[in-house]
Amino acid sequence: MTAKPLLNDCFLHDKDRLKHAEALAILKDRLAPVALSQTIPLGEALGRILAQDITAPRNIPLADNSAVDGYAFRFADHDEAGGFFRLRQRVAAGHASNEMLAPWGAARIFTGAVMPPGADTVAMQEDCETHRQDGEDFVIVPQGLKKGANCRKAGEDVAEGTKILTSGHRLKPQDLAAIASTGLAKITVYRKLKVALVSTGDELRRPGDLITIGDVYDSNHYLLKSLTAGLPVEIEDLGILKDDAGLVERTLAEASKTFDIILTTGGASRGEEDHMQTALEKLGQRHMWQLAIKPGRPMMFGQIGNCVFLGLPGNPVAAMVCFLLYGRPVLSVLGGGGFVEPQRFQAPADFEVPKKKPDRREFYRGILGIDENGKTIARKFDRDGSGLITGLREADGLIEIPEDATSVKRGELVTFLPFSGMGVV
Ligand SMILES: Nc1nc2c(c(=O)[nH]1)N[C@H]1C(S)=C(S)[C@@H](COP(=O)(O)OP(=O)(O)OC[C@H]3O[C@@H](n4cnc5c(N)ncnc54)[C@H](O)[C@@H]3O)O[C@H]1N2
Ligand code: MOO
Image 1 (cartoon, rainbow, N blue to C red):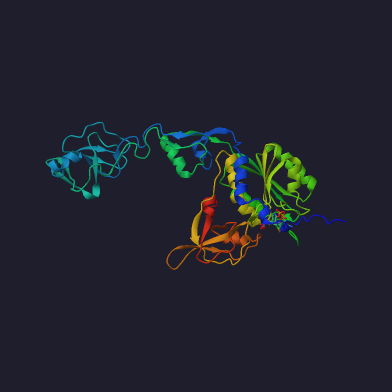
Image 2: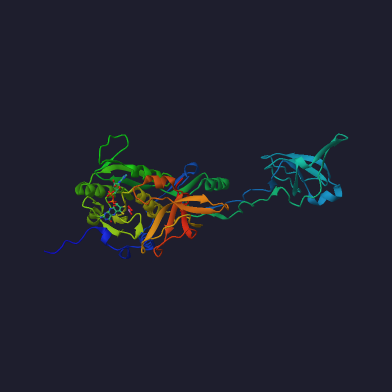
């Protein structure tokens, strides 16, 4: 009798698993936007992905205007007038003056008001003295101002014809401000992706339900729903799937007809109760599974018809790490936004890892600190278990240790991926 091949993946060497960079390359290669575009009011566009370029149709600001409350004058007059100007006009914001400034004349002006013709410089009111003589008002402007001081030039924010945003850009609050400043009330964006969210496992219960020994509350649903909250997606909760091959297959087949993407957690590994990969192989194509990373080894990506399938591991730490590294860019590409990479910076390690397995990339939960010299340092959450939500909660981001490293020494520079740079707020 020949021995059955071992299913336990611990016997597969990391050398034989797909590397992180290879996994990213597969995702980049196989994915394209699926979302069509729609026109919506600007006020509803936060977080949406632009499906048009935005070009300024006119100068912003439209005209030269004052940056302060004060007095506008012609710079060339200052020395001749000895800083002594006749007050000739009053210009408030929203009430432009067409009247040419008389020689040695000044205009009372307020912040944002258009410079009267002929004026090129503004003195702040706090620096000036006013004076009334023979029924006429004068202002005394001190020396030392440069020509053009306190005057904001037309187009200095954006010149007419400048492209300020490009199709594929995800809109931040300040982008909406910039689009509003061009006068556009409606814009074209990609429609939201339809995402099915599925938790799997006989042991799972929803918060509020009673539990008994062996049960686990479904944290991943809340984790993923929140991680996708700011993204342009419509999440539908398909609930908890029992570990039943037929049920898993039927649910995925049905969901693939209406959703752009099915996002699952759990059942991704090789146990007999892990049905995701068999269902995926039966219904569609698996493009990757089993990565040389920790946590997140059983991460799975494929498609069922035109529906993308992303199978995240069940352990909450692995689910979050895999979502941030792979799920977020996948959603971005499908939604028209291009492949988003995490922000990275280097910081000295305030920890030691005497021995790390080679051939796999590891992602520790990282906590930022400040050393005695005021420099940023990276600390590692001291326990590695993939079920420890505490580590995710305490962390500011992930520390990325490359495949070829076999240890981490204190003081060595390590790569830090802040959660804030991966959309976690
Ligand atoms: N023989 C092997 N065993 C395991 C392997 C392996 O390669 N060979 N991989 C391990 C790794 S690494 C991970 S990660 C886990 C992931 O496996 P699954 O995706 O199949 O996840 P489950 O077995 O369903 O669950 C794992 C763990 O996570 C808990 N869980 C699941 N879903 C949730 C949820 N929604 N909320 C909270 N917690 C959840 C579940 O109860 C289990 O404790 O497999 C290792 N085993
Ligand atoms: O790598 Mo699994 O993803 O650690 O627990």
